Amino acid sequence: WDERRTTVEAHSILHASGKRMKQHKKTVDAVAATLILEGYLTFRRRSGCE
Image (cartoon, rainbow, N blue to C red; front, side):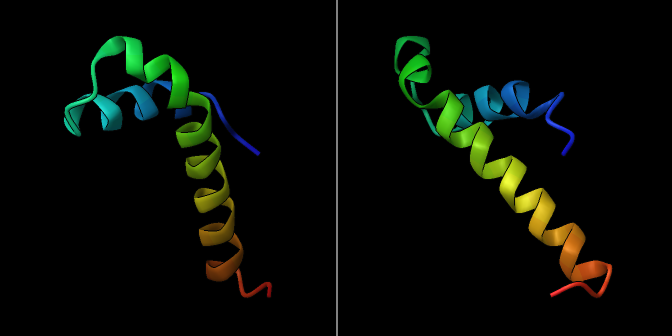
């Protein structure tokens, strides 16, 4: 599954939520993984796969 922009997007989400950069390092991978999973599940839902 495409994960090219998820780390950048995760940093953006964390920054918008008020987290400082040091705090990003602790959670950025978890947020990126959530974005990947969310994108995949949305794709499956839209393509009629269950």
